[in-house]
Length: 285
Image 1: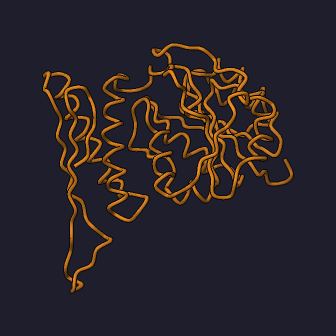
Image 2: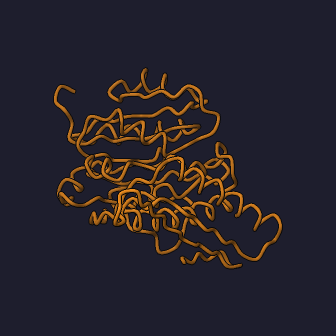
């Protein structure tokens, strides 16, 4: 490709080469776009296969990662991308040939695009597929790499985009030809925590991050602080499940960089409290 592409389609793969073989040709047919494939230490040899059989795609290789961090993989793909607009597509999603044309027609300068949430929750969905201007992606700091377990990293990104007041364009479902059917075991085999506790951990963590972002006047919370919160949430959720405890209470105290006292030596902190009731609902305090 001689000219810099407007769109960069980023797809990630770890144990999904059999899906990518079916979905990658449709990505490569999209106009005004390059395709970046992130081989996240895939045991199927994705990078070599793509280089040999789909040379138009560019490959990013991660060679040493036993588990799967989808956020890290997507951020690596974005870091290698040349386009001004990122299109994140899972390896099991086969795009319609008109996908980019539809996005080009509808996407505004202060919007990102995704598919509507399904009215009936389903395992195989397109909720991880989204289109984001590079400047918005960089503004909010990309995907949160602290979210290392299955599910939720896409929702967390959308929540930060909403906090940043980035509008949303809903993509017509007809712009996907197929979501390749597969089971939960296949989707989660490279994650360290099972989906059920993983989803709850992610939900509590996302609530905490949204509150901290709103109170801290920044879209990017310090990574060490985020990692500490995620570790504590993981511990508390584990206790709640393993010991049959009836609720979860998490209190977080963090520096308040937005407030200033009458004297420069004054320092402020803020505290938030998050509770989960026995049904798994999350409440903010």
